[in-house]
Length: 582
Image (cartoon, rainbow, N blue to C red; front, side):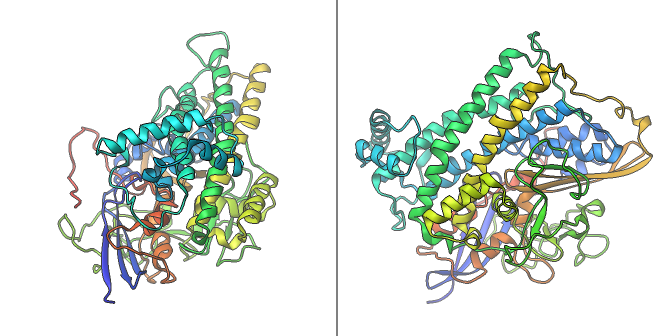
């Protein structure tokens, strides 16, 4: 069979613009290109600005990751100027980050990724009673698992299908032969999909209480912008605290009783996907989800949780050895990207010396084929010590499991025993999907059982302080200083790097999880992690070229956020350019 060329553009159910080009032969993918087709200029936009204002700009990098960039920014600025936020302010940041983590993972599984495995049309044929029995059989104790609820969802689905329009489920590959779940499992999953839509509200409200709004909650160099007083209506008060506690309890219930059993059961049906989608065999994480370091991750994190799990790198598939992280070994390459470096385009730059100078050399959109060009993406290619590495839930779970973290080990061992897989099988499409569910459990439990009790205990002791003004005035800063933050957010290790000179931003770089994962080839020809997962071992299936369900499963397992990887904004609100995709 002749080599086929397949273009997936736009790749949907992600944030931002991602185009995947594939070559396939005899039902398997032989080559792949990850192409980010929108430009991010935030680094240039914040140059010359007051460092205390930068968080508000970089928070607009994305409407999904939202506050994570702002926290990374204020932490990097604090590292540079020597500011230390009060204890309660840091706990609040950690609460907001934990709620973001649970929100992102739940939305990703049910609303972005589940439809790669769940056949919505098939669900309309299910027996609601058997759907309840199926839910019971997988250990799901979710309160929504009732005959009444499943019958209601089935009726709604049939009404939608009979109308001739599938609404939000339009354009799915519902006749693809590799949908394997029985109708009852599909009905349960669709019902949980709808439950998760409702469930999102609880999570979002937590960041609204502390940040004033969502998306893009408010933050502050030196602490938090909110005030605490249990007795005042205009502050974080007792009513709001009681609500947050209730919402966190709901989050923990949903994640443990619905999300985790669903993910484990669904991936059990698609168990071969623990051998499909293997990517770069090196992994980097500075700790568990929410862990934040001000500067190098060689001491104690500034976050108030998970101090028993240290940062580390797993190299070259050796899951027995954890190496220390050296930030000097992080470099970004542009040999396949539309940028130019003053030192030469084959060199890699450490982020504190990074440059973001666009130089577009590609064809005018709409594109026919970009893979024949040396440069084909707006995403840089970060490398650690010359290696492409995976970041994200799978990296954190592996780094945490290697250190023997009790709850993570319990969940991972339980899943491995049930599915008959090993630790090395987490480097796969199925492994990335399962790792996200494992981490959502530990994050939800940390939020409800550790962070909120600690915050409330501080209030009981009269600790209301959320801002330290000692380093607020620019006259207290050095004339020249630099700093960075490394933190673990939903999609992986996020780092912001800043150089300040004469009270203004001289240089700013954000190295985000999706850049680590979506970047293209480097000067050595090494594939980026997306590309490696699709074409690294030349065995990834693609049964029907015009229904590329299998590569969608693999790319979605990374939870792409292209707006983080490449993003542009204009402070005047004017159009910069238009991108047209076929």
